Length: 568
Image (cartoon, rainbow, N blue to C red; front, side, top):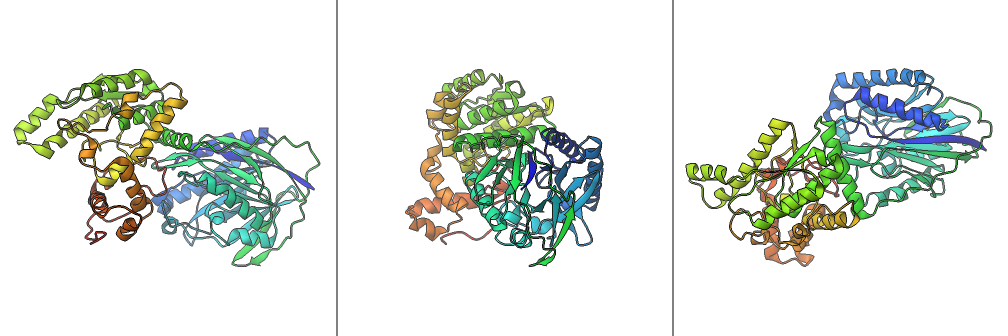
């Protein structure tokens, strides 16, 4: 039997920050060394951050990333981590083109490099635009054990590198990942990793990024499974974490080199002989996946926090209407940034009800955030009188006066403006462009209205505190842009509307499919018409954290100028 202590470093990298990410690797490699690890595995493209998008196509960035990798090898050695083999994801570039790559750093040198084979080109992924696939596999002998490498999508697709490693012979497989969060994805990962471990005939260590990057959030959920699929260790979600695992393996895996299927396998030796026997550390109990609503809330908090801080902001400002959406956004902001960094503004018009004003104040007091009142009636009056605005134009100018107010406060004080619209309203265009749609980030952009209510109730029930006024949850939602207005004047009931949108947007079902699902023709006509006509608004909406299978933006890309209509 041969022993090996593996550390899985679930860390939060920042795209483009080569120096900062290198320092992160050195810090966590030091923690792995202090834990007695012989091998430390970092996530996919940890040195560059992920996704780098068109930075991958810049030769200057690729060259800087390759130099940063070489420099990092020396930094690890100087920090006393040179004896720990470090698996580090980075951006490479060779005569073929850009590569999504992983390297092994040891003894102050880069001792192995491998390129990702399967390049995803669906959903949020555009990797065939950026990268060229790899056809080589490096297997390293580490203290007498054969360690194979695969990168993210290489385990998400059938066949390919995992099958080749199983045929060539390995004792353990490590898989750096950058797998974005979406609801229920953690339920898919463990069975997937278990299948791939069985396919390779070896334990598999899956190490995922954690943290927010624009509209994506990575939840971590790193894990290791045995060859029989049993779970050995699992890291908590949405936090940086070092999971340490001792493996005691038979060794003696077959040592096939050269051509294996479509791959060329190269064997490299770091340590030929097994380690002297040592006392293994007790394996920690695997972290349990979060309950569904706690998981979604954690994703939204982390996505907001990292967007704010990674873009150099320290505070946010948002409008507080007394309604459910702004209340949930304010609670998320306080949980993400702390109450002192959150500035709420009530902007009443002549149509604002007393309960809206009092609910906004109640929320501010419950959450402990900064609060001010900026009436907009005089501003609205100037626009409507000078331009002769009536009807919908008069309604929308109220929202636009609020947008101008928030942007003015942002410019004056350096706050990031938060747009408070939800996915349902964004889907049907129930927002005012350049009004309530202004902002730099939209925390609940991918949260359907019905889920907004669920999250509000959950947050109040679980604490700390109950920041959201009960009346904001229970009263009928209204934009309050005209007397007595409520949302159902313009929209179907939200429960019904979200069901239609789930099928049309998430499920990509057509008109006849929706009728077959039991929705009334007039409802389907109405909803699909609203969704299709609102594409231009969605294109101009701020980014927001993706939590669903198909978010607006990266996941769903439709033309603005579009003569096709379902059901014609």
